[in-house]
Length: 293
Image (cartoon, rainbow, N blue to C red; front, top):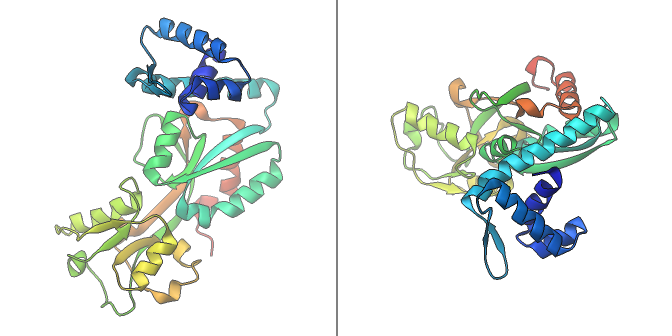
């Protein structure tokens, strides 16, 4: 097993086709077929389920892909260390949608100006999705609502924000979860930490929330709430930037639910000059986790 085989395997896993992967790698399909067969012999298990027009990862293949990506990432970082201690190459960054719309533009602009040799790539998703991306090695680093402590994850610099409850302006004041039992809420997918906090608010009050409707954007969420279709929770910093913020009423949540600590996370073995530079720059922009005015 060598790095070339791993690159071929990852390309085929992503393309679902030996022909497409061969085009991407500028090789002939027969070469990929032979090298993948050798890799499967080394692993002693099929890595793909072969169908007529497509290859799908086998259960073993899914697990192997995680390790293959980690090995390739580490090999690239090792080469970068040998060539230069200065940030260079690529940096794949994951981010929450709310962070990408508020804090990230200034951070990425400053990073690009200071380290122009680094090619930045941004992937947005829920907190659970970007955490999974870091764990699997698909993302080098991520900005997310910080997860529970994990042995394989480093939690770096962070800043503070606050989660608030928004309703139609005609809604009565809200001071407790019991006052909105049965009402509809809008939220992102189940892997969203803000949704988990909403559910935790109800759990602490020992009441059951009403229906939770999944929505794909904060702009749509705000429009639905303003129209009286339901309620939602949203970071205060994001709400302050939305043009239609005056169309909703804001209600405060308990500190245990509302206080957000959004920061950088990366794998222990994934710390590179690129990641260290981003962490140091974030410490400059948000010293001691302070929230900018």
